[in-house]
Length: 209
Figure 1: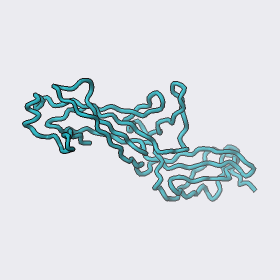
Figure 2: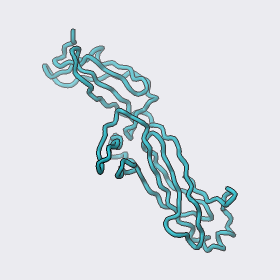
Figure 3: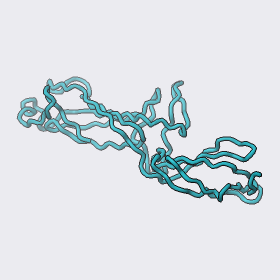
């Protein structure tokens, strides 16, 4: 992500001579880039409570090799702060968008003007899509006369729902004997929009009649 200072007319303020007159040609201008992740509405994620405010949990990542760049803050905000320095009016920072939805970016000077240079805040919002699915999770819904219903979700390495996943998957039963779960159609389900519903699960390997 590149952050560039603009002049009063909206042009890039990247004149080396101007920054030199301000004494900022060598040390640059300090800027803080605030990131706020705004998750896409996903009813498959459970909720948590922080300081009495209900909020969505961070999606569960595949392994310790993956981690979210934002942190869950009071009132459910998912925030991260990156510090950078603008040299001759421009600077770059690495932004890791790990939550599908929107990422709101705001660049501002921390504290008082530096060497008399005061620049207004700049903001931009970008869309973030889930990466290709790397795992599947199963969420039990309810138990009825015809067996249990289970939802299957395709998720990317950061736990986001991959809505572009359109494929068939096989759910493998677990347990032995009476504990073994019987699956209709051999456990074969087709994901549409990254989601599928499997019905008729029963214990003991039998199919409901």
